Image 1 (cartoon, rainbow, N blue to C red):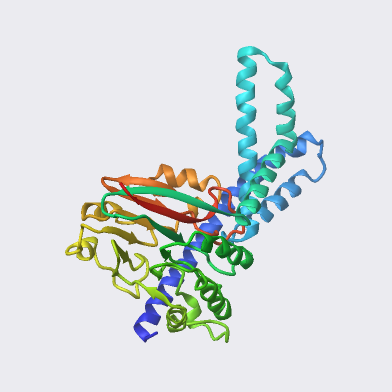
Image 2: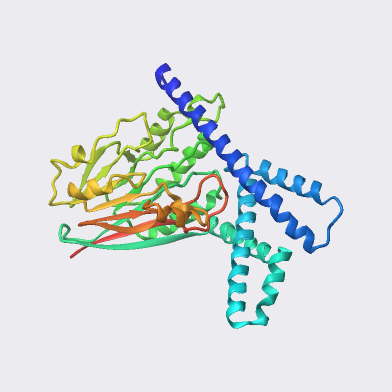
Length: 384
């Protein structure tokens, strides 16, 4: 890494760290204020009158501190505790409204459960248990696409966002690879963020050794994600790795890196994009990549982030595959992503092009996933 790149990297990371600290303080302030006020209801219900004020302050401060590292387990526990309390209050309001209309005394117990905090704790446990289950279970998600550009069927295996050896048991991927091989894929696409800022050099090498065990007709292809190369390049740790280490390891395992490159695979043309947030590699426009491409063949664009899909559709791509979003990872982020128009998870259509966003093989930061499943994607392209 040269001095200019080093300076740019340090500047970007200082800004990122500052943003995370600021966000943590803001969330902590909101959570702490809510908890301070909510404790009044709980303490009154249990007739705790002595030391009420110091108890409220101590609990609020604990929740504030828990949120300072916004991607820590303590922060999501604090956030989920408050979210559970809010949902409990909403349920109680709905029940009170129903009671005013039809006077169902049988529902009065909901009010007691809400005031006691038992309903909130029950909702909290559902969120946490579902998150633990989700991060530890991998599913296969299948899609079917018909096209007159192919005269035989193809099976494309898309694996994204493994963030290897960070928050998920590595045996989950190793076991899934056994199932992937049973599919006999024609093409394997690795959609970026296969490793992470916290992945060690030894784990990085292990990952690509395991991935190389997937047999395919036309090979395995890798595109960069925003986490694949990061601060580890500045580390003096003997088990850290550089960009060169990563690229050499990928290639030594017979995996082809596509960095705004094209690869013709029989009736399919695969275009692998540089990640939009990865400054080390300039990113060409969709027009530059797709103009001059043989549009009589089925064109797949692999882009880590679900970006420029309308441009890709305009210039003749048939399929775009992306990851990055983790499907929102934790409820209710999936709902928020959908509301703001992010292609969060699943299949979308843009003219003649299909766009598929995978929720990824794991999550990031928090060791929970309950918004959408951990998955690998299988796309069956069949003659129409």
